[in-house]
Length: 202
Image (cartoon, rainbow, N blue to C red; front, side):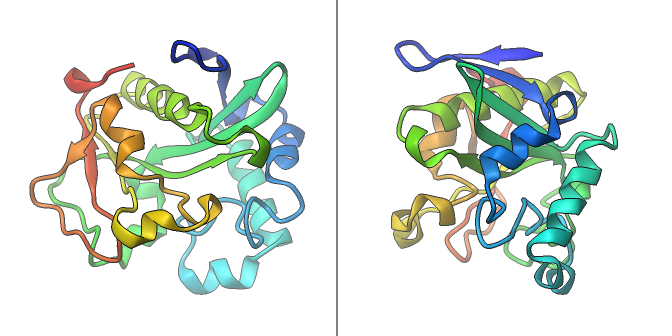
């Protein structure tokens, strides 16, 4: 169990998904699985499998992952209530990266990736997502990740409703030490950002 905090903001208790009751993640995501039956499977499955699984099948996929012992993500609690989620795992675990052109690997390092952030609607705009990012970096580097990637939305895409900006925005990552990767391509509103262990900031 780890804790991340930012002064003057609610202090989250943050745990690995595998160590949290599955019912807590269900409570946070709600009947819609966070958004449209996703259950954080949009980048973990091939597109056709994801679309076919929207709803119950995607829920079962995430539940299986959380009980597998593999790194899946972190769940954040405020006063005992699950209020925030961050998907963080080796980049190789996400089928999305096998087909995307704009976010292709820029080297052979076994990077980890933050693929999704979700905060309960009544708890947004309090800095909770930033706490989750800091905790995700700490978690990834403790697990031996050589570098952590994120894919924030910028430009006009950053003005969409929060639930549709599930990878976050640059202002969420830059205070934690993330910077745009030199060889990254910015396409579709997302840019590949990277964080190295020596640059991580709480």
